[in-house]
Image (cartoon, rainbow, N blue to C red; front, side, top):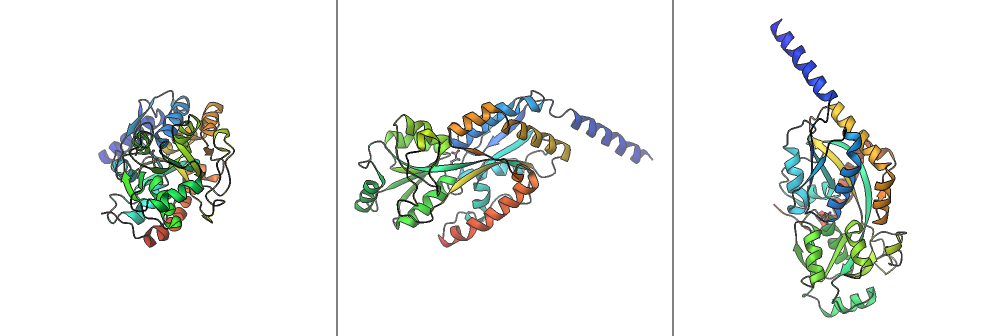
Length: 323
Ligand code: ASP
């Protein structure tokens, strides 16, 4: 009897705590450096989710390193009370093939809240590169084999995946220089310490517009409509037939986070995606917001599983691994 009363009391306490959720700030882990493309998505989203999350702040914690796997591991092990969430990207689906011992199970250790957006990538170069279009870049690469530095955000980052496919398509090996995110990589690219990089438009658009970097192509099969990027050719039309890398972001919680909490976060995500301010800011950076069933956790999880099956074989074939 005593046990039953205790269980009932706990359940009631738990339910009322959930009813108030959230009643304090939430920690949103971004597994890359501050100021980069995923960070930009996260900060915009946090702003628009604040109101539907009872006005509570969503505080960004940047945990960069190892292509996003350090931040994801931190959330997988965090308390599952809804106050630690993860905003991650395509790396959720490439890391399982890249790491021999990933410190979490992608499909088992998280609750899938929903998908946020899809973001194209651009091939960019340092401003001092002696090439002003893709043909000139290609000629420069041919002449500089063995000396080309390609920046990325570590194994498992989108810049890694895109750079890997680019090297394969070009048949040229490059020296990769990993960073904790493409924000610090961008600083070095602008400063001329590295030669080229594949990066998401949520980071590159402003730098392309201001002429701080040279832009050669987009990685999607179709040209983009974003004004600052519309002139860029696709890698496919430049001869790298079938080249297609577009990344996505999703929101996750530690396994076992209560359903009412997940529902509340998902509802706030849906409200944010309808916020005209969020839509305007994201569209200006080339991002396309999700409007289909992947906005829901179950469909997003199915999508991530399909992505794991899509990218795994290509990565394994390239023979890229880390411990
Ligand atoms: N999204 C990463 C970042 O925010 C970079 C990457 O995936 O390549 O830095």
